[in-house]
Image 1 (cartoon, helix red, strand yellow):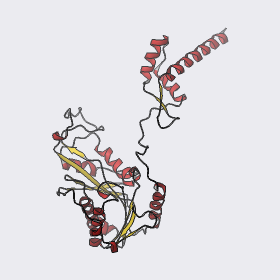
Image 2 (tube, helix red, strand yellow):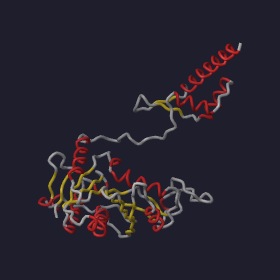
Image 3 (cartoon, helix red, strand yellow):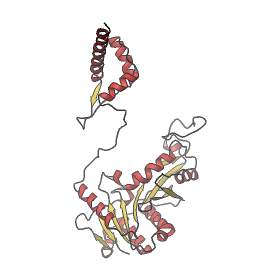
Image 4 (cartoon, helix red, strand yellow):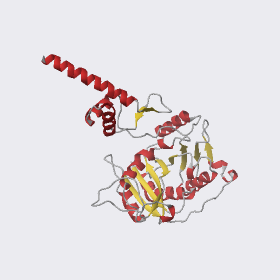
Length: 325
């Protein structure tokens, strides 16, 4: 009798599970880009309630979670991995970048540079959480006219030393802004850490103030090379591949965590927050404020880029070049 009762319970459980699976399948949706990816928009508590309303069968949240896991569902967030465009020589450029890292002399700096997402100063909402005694009240809208200024963080990540150098500007992200930051880094830190350096390797995105299409960036790099006496080797990451720039995941991701959920009440506050950035692997960050006004709309003709002081890579010249002092 006991065995028969257990069998009945097992059969009933199996029947209920099949009904629940069919119910979940009814709310399944698929990814438009990957046929193997599915999701459901319902939470376990909602599934439990709707399933009871339809079948008059109570199922605990825990059982639903376990069943979802068995079916291959996990509680995940979206992942930004689909490129918005393509570049024909993407893989070839990555091979060039990898080879440049291997052949660089340890006496020469290897830097990854980029401008982090621009922020706004003032009592405005910011994503993230922090420990506080009460919820921090901010304005219910984040319109631009409510801000008290722009926060433009430009970063330099020294890949060999695992150190970050961030300049916070409030004007515009321009080629002059980028080169000023490089010069600040070299004169205050780089020249002391790499006293025997003859070359400097720069990794940067394909667009923005350091775009490979802009003659202005190359012209300003020539100024930097002349002032420092360094040969500047530049490798741009292919278009639509900026997320692979090392500064994004080695520096900016950590900076983002350090600044999460905190109101940017002043530039000094932003500076202190970024300076707190650190990791168990030894990352540290030096920050400075730069309130210099930078002009936008400056244009340089190709003829102003001295051809005698620049040489291009034989395979992908548009993305790789060397500038001489």
